[in-house]
Structures are given as structure tokens and as C-alpha cells.
Image (cartoon, rainbow, N blue to C red; front, side, top):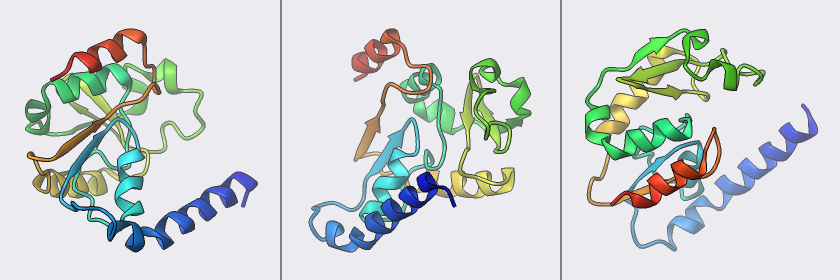
Length: 162
């Protein structure tokens, strides 16, 4: 194991070992985090909560994430179409990542989703569909950051959302 791998494993152990303590400190356990990357999954794990979002273990490129949350119900009603990673519109941006191509890439209409923490299309579909049913539409946290090709325009478009 590399030093970085060891560091990440220790952080995971720390995060999970304090999860029950943290959960007892919050006043709400039914909420959905719609995140553009893995952050949402780590939050649920940090509080030992059931993952109530389909956007766990994946990432979106920034522009596609903004489109996704701008019309989320439309996109969640689409069937995931899996594509060869080399067919991705972001292939040239992502091909330098040594892990790119080793995980499923899906499309919902005109956006792409990179399921980096999944090993198969079957696993993606099972978890995606199960977690869509868990969405708490009354309590959603939309989280966005400046990764994955984010531009100033993407940030401005995010800030304009209701």
C-alpha cells in the first residue's frame, strides 16, 4: 500500500469510527445530498446514515452537473445508457487519469456521469434506481465545487439557480 493509500484508509477509519457520535448531534437524518462528486457519500458515511441520493460514488463534469440539477426530475426519469469511455465527450480531458476507462460511464439524455466507485453497469443500475426512490424532495442539499472542468461561467450558473 502506498503512503497516500494508507493516509486515505486512516481518514476513512477515523470518519467511520466517529459516525454514530456525529449522528447523535444532528437534528435531521432524512435529507438528500445531490453532489457533483464523492463528497455526498462521505457525508452520509460520516454520520452513519443511509445514502439517500443517487449521486454517490460518481462525478459529473461541471457543466453537466449544472444541467443535471437545473432539470433534475427530467434527468432522473431518463434511463442510463452506458457508453464506452472513449466515446465520452470529455475523453480528451480525462484520458490522462490512470483510472479513466476502468469504471462505467453513463449518459442521461445529453449529460454524462462517471461512476468511478462502481465496478459494473449492473451495480450502477441497482444502486442508482434504489437511491432515486430514497430522495427526500423536501430536504435537498445541492453541493457543487470548482473541480472537473469548472469555469467561472459554471459557478455563475450555479449561483443563479433557485
